[in-house]
Image (cartoon, rainbow, N blue to C red; front, side, top):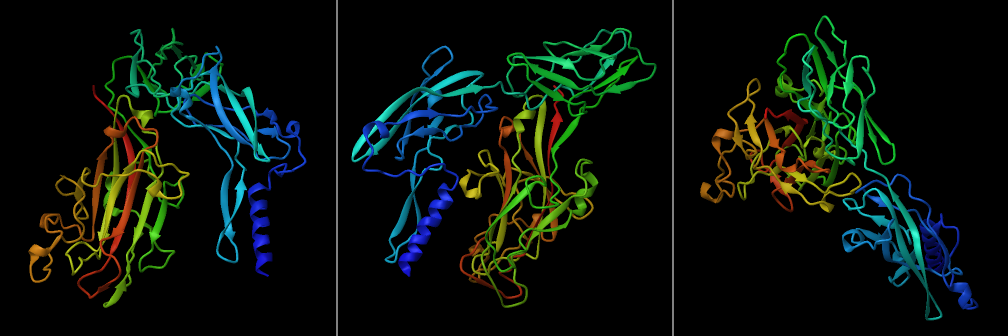
Length: 522
């Protein structure tokens, strides 16, 4: 019976790993050298490969007489036949078959099969130097038959056509500009934070009122356009790449440019743009966050970071772009005196954002409101029972299954914080305040034994209060993958007992997270 189970596991694993493969590789003793020598290696064309971006090929086809092939990229050239240096080739890799454990036999030994589902797939990592043009890669395919290797080198087997990178954003500084009738004045030039620079500009709207410089994007009033009253225009602008004729259309928006047409000069205030306004309405990347619960603690498994009403004190300065938003609350606590409390660990990871679209002419900041209540300190150490820290990453991606796969920096001591008393905000200070009431705990008869005594400040009691925190994003303004996160963790291991005074994990809340780009005056 056990043998049948093992056989079933093997067949199940093979069907799972290779169910989409056209043929099955089998080492046939009767094959000749001409049968097994690799031939006819073919790759499909990669569609929409872009400059400097992640590029993946499809699976190749190759004839090997049914033997399992291995692949090697021997070299590459550009359209002019020049060899690609390590500056290029270090970004390129090709997948090969790997051994995968699919179960155990009756004696507990691993059962392994060969996974060749991705073999031959070529990947070029993001951030590569490949710009617009054609590239060719020489691939060597090898098989082993009866202990002997058979190889074929396929020159230019994989052809890659890299298309120009289209701009992801278009910026005019300032975003609101005044054109006075008859002055001959033009707006500032258009700025593209990213994208191939070989472009021209044209208008997609308001062509009866405006003209645009095809080379710079500067805009001016069309001859004869003279409205009798002040008018605001938000023209659609088309950016056309001159290398292949592709277009990127930026539809009229105050986030790009507002042109105020008037007969006399008008002073226009600097603009603010809220470019990330998560609502916490649901747990998904579109609504702004995903949670990762590693240790649930003493609460039910469905409860961590439950949706609640948004922070009331934040309402007075909540941006109009942040409508119908919520807060999320985590309460890893078992209520009642003498209740046993278990450790908790979870992450709330905000949707990664491309800050580099705002790296010119803007000051960037992230605002967040953090609240805590019913927190008490550990009787054995004086530390807060649980704590939240603010983290930042520049290499986390949406595809990651665990935040531990990324690199994080703790920025809790860098935010500008203000504690709300419900109606007004207190004095601003630097650093997230130590949680709770900030009273010292007598540990073994002495407050000097309180391990958090140097962190507690009686003037920063934030128990049952919201804390407004603002993080300056200047350091990360050139990042394409900026991610903000909150990690909630326990300062104890094993279990502790809530005795009515000490050792209660309490609750944390997060609300009104948003990123803002503010025009600089200079």
